Image (tube, rainbow, N blue to C red):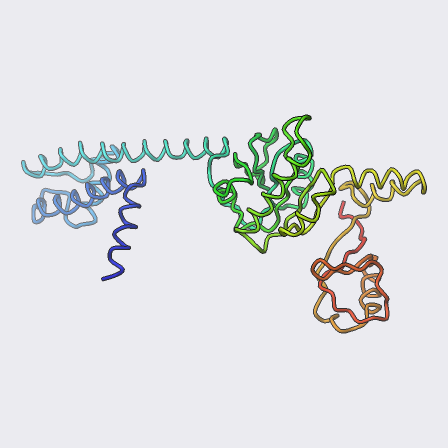
Length: 339
């Protein structure tokens, strides 16, 4: 008995759905027509209706306006009833089809305008759209990973593997529509609307976004872009897994290029999607756990890959001692690009 009110509440919610009322009306007319015509025509040798199936066949011809004429209906009452089925059935089916078409158009328009809820799973969300976001999205799409852009600025490109939600990562409802609970990675780009906006204010929005995302999905991997190094600790404390300070990496590349000419070309080769070599992170197979790092290193070299670093959670060690035991979960490698 306790379940009945819950069922009734859910049923009322479903009844309010746009398509359910015309669908229920059409089904009711068809059901009424099948049984009423069968009862009125039963036992009449001149009638074409001799079973519930032939009655259904006649009703479906009638309400869909096909009218093959291979199933005659005879008798005054049966024909009067048939007139009612024609008027009510054609009207209800027409109303159902009109609602269906309207819903399809509305859903398509809502999706295009970013007002619909995404159906994506295991996707990557990019918060805040700009030229940088477009480049990131294109690079991710090359790996056949679905991408969703959450922004108040509509993306200037379309792709079947890209979804768009009009909103902001500062709003919990927008995050919900973006499928944040089923997402594996979120990239939060600095949302600077004007040159005059303070760096601390822009970073504050990024930090609040990190908090909102981690509240909904604590297991999501969050990559955040900051404009000031001063806010790095705050972002990390709220759960950011990786933090990129805008301008910091480019400054390091320039200074290294000055001191060590040619270094920037190596970075460009490894980080570019068009490069012949690339960085790759892979899970360490359980069969290597507890063995020496040298064994794993030699195994990777046989596969044509160079071991650069090992990672366990936030802890990373670059070029670890080869004779130590392997107790890390991920390996960062340099491998040949698929291109």
